[in-house]
Image (tube, rainbow, N blue to C red):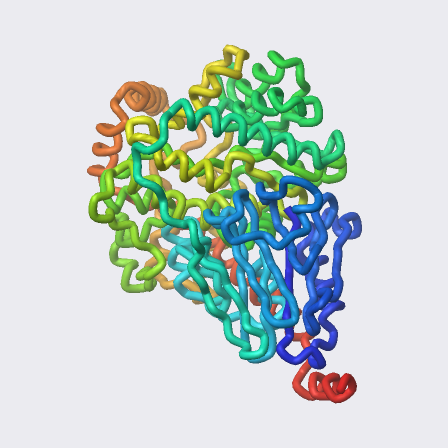
Length: 600
C-alpha cells in the first residue's frame, strides 16, 4: 500500500513550496533501505486551485483520475470506463477515497474503515492523508494527545478513533466528510446503507454461493491487474489464507501468486503455521518463500525504530517484524508490489460481558486490570467513541459482530495493513460490506467460528493438512528474554526515569522483577501445564470457555508495560522530530504574504 497525501489551501496564492514539501514527505515515508528506489507522484490537483497531492511508492497503484484518488479496491468498478467515475459512498470494497473540485472536497473510507484516512484543518489549509506522520510534517507542529499514550500503554493501540496529535482526526467509516471551499467548513454526513439487516433473512446456501462467487471474482480482478511475480499471498495453517489460495485456483490465477510464510524456527515436533504452510505448498507443487525471524535483537533500537516508523504508533505488534523489515525490503527488490491478505469481518470470539469485549477488541483500559486500576487517575481513558454496551433486543452474536466491525477493523485490523505500506499494496478480498451484511442476515446459529469459511475450505482445500497449527510468531515479551534484551530494557527504563516523560508509578511497575513467563527455557511442569490447558481449550464448549475466561481477573504484565513504554517514547520522539523538520520547511507568515502578493 502506498501512502497518500492531499492538500487544499484556502488561499491558492499562499500554497508556496507545497510541491517540494510533499516530495520530502514521500522520502520520509519511504523505508530507509528503499530510498532512491521507489517512485513517487507529486503534483498539483487538476481542476482545484490550491490543491496538491502526493503518492509515496506509486508503483502498481492508480494515479488520481476524474478528480479523485482511489486507495485500495472498489468492487463497483465493473470495467475500465466505470473506474473513472466518481465512487459512491455506498461502494463495496476495501478502500479510501478523496475527491476534489473547485467547490468542495469529499473524503471517506469503506463502511468498515479497513483503509484509514486522517485529516487536519485550520484557517489556512486542509490536509487529508493515510499517514499521521505526513500531516504532522506538513503542518510543522505536534500537539501530543495524552489519551493516546494511556491507551497504548494499557491496550497496545492508540485508542478508539484517537490520533497521536490531538488536532488530527481519524475519519469514521460511517461518515462522508465534505469541505465547502467557499465557506471553509467541513460537514460530516452520515452515509446511507450503514444499517445492518435483521438476522434470519438469509439462507446459508445462498450466502455460501454469493461468498464464493464474489471472492473469486475479486481475486481474479486484483491478481489480474498485476504482472506475474508481483503478488504475494501470506500462507499459514489458518483457514483464511488457505481459502484465498484455494479460491485463487478456482479463479485461474494461482500461477501468478507467490506463497510466503514467516516466523520463528521451532522444534521438529511442533506443528506450527510454518510447517502447515510448507505441507500445503508441497501438496499444490508451489514454491514457498519460507522466512525465519530472529528471536532476539542484534540492535534493539534499530528494530524498534523501524517498527515505529512503519506503524506510526498505531499498534504494538512488532513481533512479526523483528528482522527490521529486511524481509519486506527483499520482497520489494524482488519485484513484489501486492499482498493478498486474509483479513475478514467475521469474528470468532465470544464476549461474555463488556470487560471481555474490550479485552478481545483490543481496548482494555487500566481500570480493566486488577493490578493497574490505580493508574486510572493518571490517564484519561474516557472516550465517547467507544461504546461497547449491548443494545436493546440485540443477541450476543449480533453484539459481537457489530462491535468487531465498528471498532476492531477500523483501528486494529487496518493498522496491520499499514505496517508494510511502504513496501507493497495490500488487498483483502474477503473484506466486503455486501458480504458482511448478508452474513449478518444469517440465522445466529449459522454465524461465528468462521462456519462459512470452514465449509468452503472443506470444499476446495484437498491438501489434507490439519487446521489446528500453532502460531509461528514469538510473543513480543520473549524478544527481550535474553541477556542483551534485558540490558537494553533496563537501560532504556533508566533513561525514561531521567526524562520524566512518564509517571513514576508506571515506571516502577515496568521495572518489577520478571514473572514466571520471563523464562528462556520453560520447566517440565510449565510445559505440562501449557499442554493441559491447550487440550482443555480445544475440548471445552466455546461459550463455557468464554465465561470462565471472563471470570478470571485480568492482569497486565510488567514486561508488556515495559516494551510499550519504550515504543511510546520512540513514537513521541518521532512525531516531535517530524514536526521540527516540517516547521523548518513551512513558509513563515512574511514569506506567505510575499508569495500571495507575487501571485496576485
